[in-house]
Image (tube, rainbow, N blue to C red; front, side, top):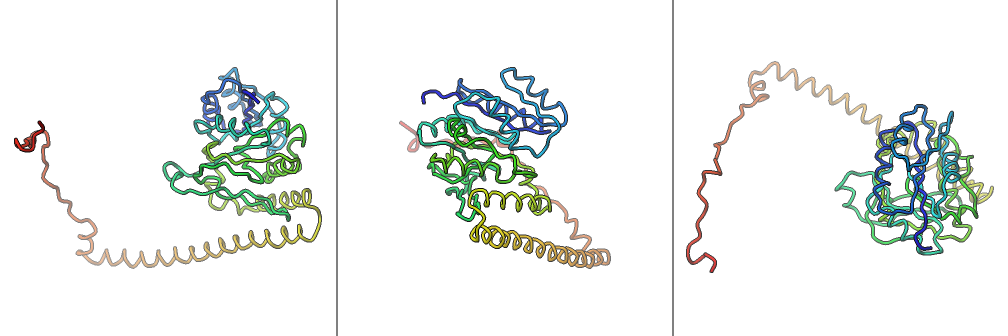
Length: 334
């Protein structure tokens, strides 16, 4: 396919400032055969005002909905016309060369979906660790997703992609259908579901490391967000639905979901609970020790003196007045 038309669909809700930067990053990708579709389910009109500043951007407004990622993606697909349909979240900022890397992936006619690196660590730290991504789906419906932010050079075939930076060939979407709206609440597994259907239809799914975005996820920056009850409920509910839908109601699926995956999550929760308990005790012990240190300070003039040591000052040297070294005749260039 020569010079395919690419539709970049941006899903947004109540994050106008991030949306503005996201649109600008996409517009800065030097490829003329593209369109941007913004699907906005905001409860205010701030995002709509941002979109209005770019007449070339197609706006799709969804009213009265939230936690509707599958529906929003399907609305975006319906409004788009591209041979390739790419998805970005409003907090995903495309790197320079993102679109070029995407296009290169689809030069292989067997590729039905492609995604790339999702960077959540600030530069330059994000470029310190190398490794391959691990994006797999087991026969019991267990989903693994690790290493998507690591530095790598080679494209690798994977089982699924990360929703904030993924794309699909329209032909593949027409063959397998759109996103399943039965993934509710956090919408976990909605992108994995579509990837599995694309792969089962015979298409290859490629991870392209140079197709990179910076992801400013507020949830990822909250260390205990994943342990909130509604997030855990949504994760359990959607994971079980995904496993039964694709791998059937059988002992392997039930063991994988109810024992293995549930056990992993439970162990994480117990570890966090234990660490919080130990941390609470350590903090109280620290305060008691600090109390003793503070009383000792008040009772000793010597301690008070050492608590505010005198500051010295070095001799200033005026480098402008210093004579430059003169090379001897034997050291001079000839």
